[in-house]
Length: 508
Ligand SMILES: [Zn+2]
Figure (cartoon, rainbow, N blue to C red):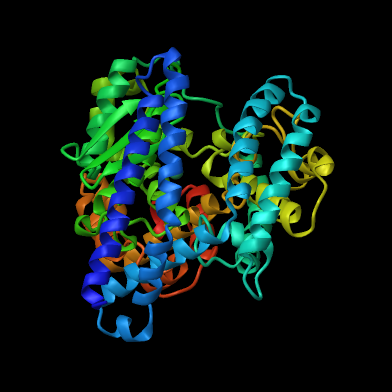
């Protein structure tokens, strides 16, 4: 068959599949926003049916034959670079999907759906024993999957990591993480010594109007570049971002009356994800070149806006007048006090509440443990003790029970093993991108202090967003930054910030 004709058929198939994933995303968005409590049963049937249809499409034999034919050297030679990148990406996805026996896919779906319910109960009762056998089953199934997908010279864990961070090599990732961990542990200890000399919290009543927070957050999202003609901001329990179509991106946050920052920083984080999605090439929607490069690259965008922009003094010099207009009690504290409060270092047991300095230590603990679970068959019985030991070693504290220990995250109960490292990769990539961007654009912080975010966003669009999944994530980052994954820019940024001169964070 003619190459062009084949390409059209393959694109048509992939784009229709993406209509299904967009529909699934809408059902999920609704589930977490407006669905009435009794709507759950029907929703779960709808989602199961559509997921099944999507899986059938993704493993369709005729589609696979066309893809394989297209990817032959002869056909590829007649395609543009962008079409080649699409074909390669689609074929990689197909080959992965088709390798997995349906029985294994179904068993995993069942085990993880049950696992999440069991986990909720075990976490509530702070009893790992209740979750133990469920987790054992999930780990066993994921290990089976990892063995099927394992590539030569790679570990089994690599094949799980690959599903979230395509092409990543866990041995290399582990080396960079170990370098960062060894530098962070003393850095955190020193910062905590200094922290104890500072006043504990902002000296104002922790009571901030939800209406004020809503208005301020929306204003900020719009100013940094989230396009509300192509997106919405709504509220939910756990913030997230989802894409329903090429011009429909939803971000979600939650507001707490006792915090001026948690809702706002939820919005900054999710707007970072949303602006990445809005910057992907629209004409390629539903194809690899129109999709995000990886979870790690996605997280680099959210953490960059949330932390490296949003917790800088420049940003707050700009935001302060608007912030006190919506939250008047903030006028009784200075910009410096707010910035210090937002960059406080704390020993904490809970990952999602951790500050920027200690956050990666929480990730390394999970990464090291899950790698052992998959590659070294670490028995799940040993998890609670290993967890406690690592928290003692890295953070100097120990959970009192499993609820605030090994049971705190939903990920493993949902089968998401190999996912955690993408959070830390995102932090490292964000620091590398900020360093490269500041070399190209000049003094970013003084731009932020004038409310000029467009130059940074344009730069990210050109260097990251517009490429979609054209390259493997580590290749894209290396092309942009001119250097491979490194912990140094992040460490440099943190030590600049912690030494009390956050403005020098990006100076070289
Ligand atoms: Zn995120």
